[in-house]
Amino acid sequence: MEEEKEKTPTTHIVLVSIPALSHQISILEFAKRLLNLHKEHCFHVTCIIPTLPSQNNNASKPFFFDSLPPNVHCIFLPPVNFDDLRNDPSVSLEAQISLAVSRSMPSIREALNTLITTTTTTTSSNKNNLVALVVDAIAHEVLHLSKDLELKLKPLSYIYFACSAMLLSLCLHSPNLDQIVPCEFRDYPNLIQIPGCISVHGKNLPNSVQDRSSLAYKLYLQRCKDYFLADGILVNSFMEMEEGAFKALLSQSQEEANPPVYGIGPITQTSGHHHRNNNGWECLKWLDNQPSNSVLYVSFGSGGTLSQEQIKELALGLELSGHRFLWVNVREPNDKAYASYLSDEGADPLSFLPEGFVERTKEKGLILGSWAPQIEVLGHGSVGAFLSHCGWNSVLESVVKGVPMIAWPLFAEQRTNAALVTDALRISLKPNNDDDNKNNNNDCVVLKEEIADLVKRLMEGSEGEEVRRRMEKLKEAAACAIMEHGSSTITLSKLALIWKSMSN
Image 1 (cartoon, rainbow, N blue to C red):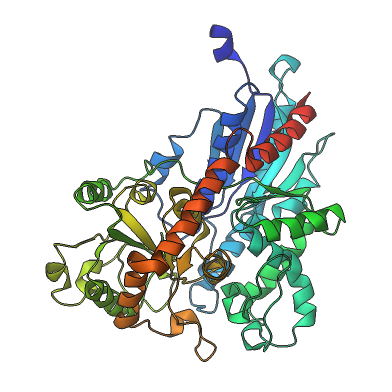
Image 2: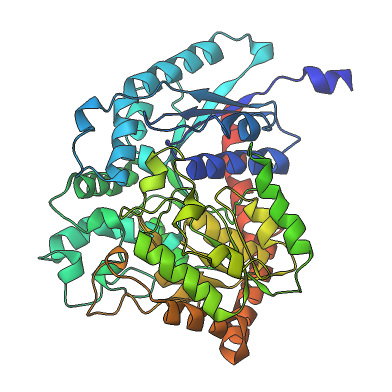
């Protein structure tokens, strides 16, 4: 027993994340799964994390990060300076995150060199080999650093793609699309062909490609090109969920048209025990008193916001539906869909709801201006549906728990995710606010009548039953994928074998 405690990790994996808590959680959950699957081998993981100047994650950092295994270590880099961007509204959220990584490159290089010095000065009996560098898809610039590391045996470099295989297929195809499509993607008259996937309208592509003259698009295109530098791409999805996309990606890998692709998902947060706010846990007591499958869970993620008009229509639509609901993370309205992502909490968000709404719905609804333990909420027997912004983590959590969705994308790649879950997988319904005669999702308001109709269609009748049946089948496939002989477990084990062999 004493010998086990003194055993020193021998295979060192370095992760580089981005200043987005959802991405940090995903890549660290990947590390935890790797360690859990291969307890007999001594892996050590270090995660380097850049920081945005406007972020205030102190409330959640100590709780999530302190619960990590002892052989997972995090290095938080100092916040970057964005003074030159303060008065430039044209710099989007995606561009800010990319720039945060770019401006953190000196700190990332210093951290890597320190780690290399540490690993190369250990004695042979205390060996700690750096064998792999796994970087978030938005931290792609670090791939260039990996080739310059002063090591006899260079670590293999990988992209950790915390999104769908469909989005990866789009990214790897984007340099070609840039040459083929002569106009803005949203104005292109034909559907965009994505290898192995459904075709989508240009306006359903990620926000970063919607203005091809923007900094965000230039950064996106460079990111897509850099993916080809990687020794492999790890995708947080699984074959049984996105078979067409994976088959296309694997076929291209065999032809050496793109790096090897590894489907290792679904990787989701194992519990909600990472947040300081205890009020969020109170909602579970409320759910305990609701009938089975009767509650619509409403959440737009950790940063999504709605306009004042849309908040009003959503509230009245929930009331009009007559169904029970749990609405969490209600925020002060803003016309920028990602406004809460870059700002601290301000005024009481409940004060922006329609007058009398909270009182009128108190018997059927619970509204929180704060966080809630989403994993536990989705796994609760009283929750029958999920109105979601379609962030990829939320999509996977909904799949793992088997909860059908109403897709309400706001920013980033969420519209592409919504197309996947609604049109390809058919595990979701969505508002009709992306018809060809309408503008971007955030420029039009979904009215209360349509919201009430969507809720009723999903919670009642044959259409909702069909969606629920498909989601239940996908839930079973997700569980199988991460079992001992499941597709994702086998794939991750193959990776681990490669890394183990490099440390011998």
